[in-house]
Length: 311
Image 1: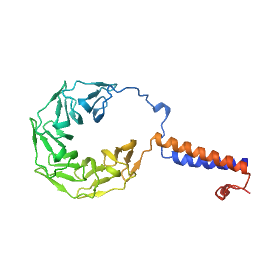
Image 2 (image 1 turned 180 degrees about the vertical axis):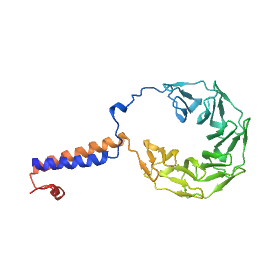
Image 3 (image 1 turned 135 degrees about the vertical axis):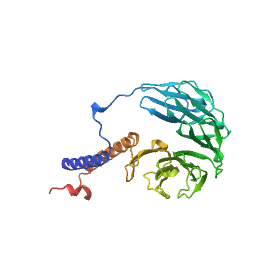
Image 4 (image 1 turned 90 degrees about the vertical axis):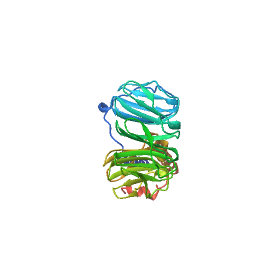
């Protein structure tokens, strides 16, 4: 019976090792303790980093916080309206958009309100330069910055646009809550055939010939320069945002802490400890129960364990 218990333990070690094989190994000397607190209890909707020591996050009730490389701190906001997205061109030039067409600008010293051409909710903003930028929102709203003012641009859709990503002044994409995708060609926006019927929450363009969009039910689609196609997803949970570091490295995040990563060939899940640890604990408990039961019965182990029999 002791031999049987040993065999069960060996199986448990093998299973646990297999589960942990894909986890990243971190050496103690490589761990840098992080200790900071958020200066706000408000919902934060968007974050954008200019550099490792300069970043911004915005959220409900006009909340704006700034990262200086050490801590996050509250920054005076010119609005009490909810802010849904923030994008910075440089440390002295940034934009945030939000509720009922709210637009605010950072000039390096303070944030201030900017005249908006719309009262529709603005969901996303993307700046190509200090003189060229775009924002999209409810009811197909599209507005553009020319360096002096924001103005409305004709939209081919009337449903909400949730994300915009520009490649250049003559190439850009926006996605909607119905899976619709529209493209800017330098002169106008037009509808583009989409293989997705689910809500698309986020789009990110690596280049004119490489882009990604993610959405509800784990939807992932990719642009190859000619068309959008579905890509196998490792999750069925909603994905809210995608960001590509390069053509071979990118991340998408979503509901319940979902994190997936693009390896250059496939999207793989990153298992959070909150999910993995209960799994390992459950497996260990099962092993203990099986072992105790077998020892009590003092009968021949299940055939499964005969593979370890040395008799």
